[in-house]
Length: 305
Image 1 (tube, rainbow, N blue to C red):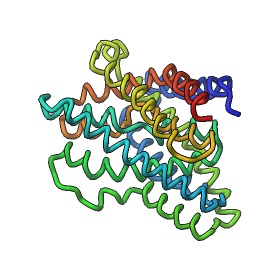
Image 2 (tube, rainbow, N blue to C red):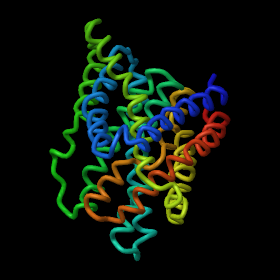
Image 3 (cartoon, rainbow, N blue to C red):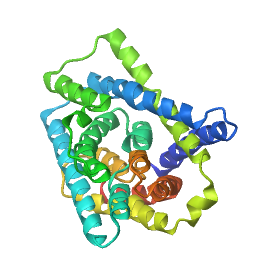
């Protein structure tokens, strides 16, 4: 049974990794250009190995069904959250409306959720992260990306290394295919690097911004409230309706409780769609995550376990 002591210990580990990145950024050991390069390596090289390392698991038909229901839950929650956010802000300027909807809807599942969930729940967390990647990419790179750019959806946007690795993982699990032992060792050891590297990247990103400016952004508090607390609580109610054991439900809850996705900030900057609001909200929700996650998990352990 998961205990809050374990949760706090893992949050402390995460904060220490982020602190390493923060210090490295402040002393210019890692500059912004190097941070972007490391981010690309993490997302395009290490993440696929992390995903494929889960192919050594054997799943029953019931477990596969649970993953399918988890996918439906995430797709539905992402879709409804975006829709409601757009409707509530229908009179706001387009940049504010689009960026806020993305900030509230999409969580940082991979860079923050995966390291934490893997430490708390084991390799099953990789499978639920694969589900989160599918749901995230399916809506972000179609609907959300089109709103940011004003351009029509292009199918090639979905062809990311993470998506390709996820599809391979699904096929391997379905047909019971496992990697040869030496390949599995390489995939597992390479994939394990995502934990320290992704968290160090977050720390470097924080070092590039003045904390006082983040704390003065009032809109970031509202966005953080919804992203870190309101949405996870809504997800918790939906999880009550789905089958699955306690750890599986709590793992999904952690992914839903993650702070704003950094990809929102990237697209907001590229398309001049309230870039300051996006960057400050991402950092604000990440800072607050250390306080909001224990609250969400303490409630979830009573309701879902």
